[in-house]
Length: 146
Image (cartoon, rainbow, N blue to C red; front, side, top):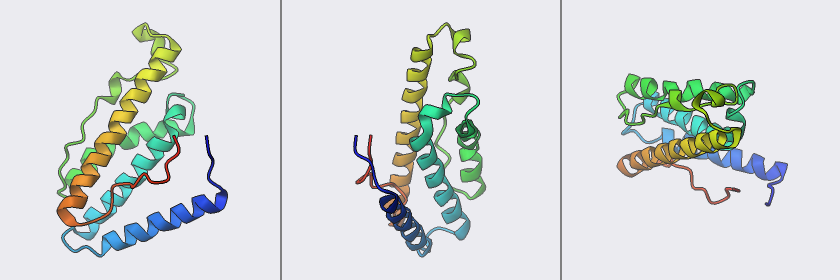
């Protein structure tokens, strides 16, 4: 597995900030819609980057579950399509996996599969916004490390 240097991460962060600023110049979306779409990009990135630790109930990244629950409310509030629906309540974390009769590994794998679907659904949604409004919210993925 390759690693990106600190400087590389900073350049990626600067590139993303420039893309968000360029997106805000598109006037087929309101300022509020741009704000929610930028927030959705951040949530998607946080989930994509931290889903292993989201399984741990005591992890600071466990709060990302709440952000996933809030997506449709935020989209609806600014009149964007709210098609992103998941049943996160059906996913066990490290504190509850035995209730479903799963092994730790099976529960973790189930959660990772779920979050992969969430990531893909958000990317598809952002791509549909990009196509319709000529924006660039969907991540490029050119420098992703898996």
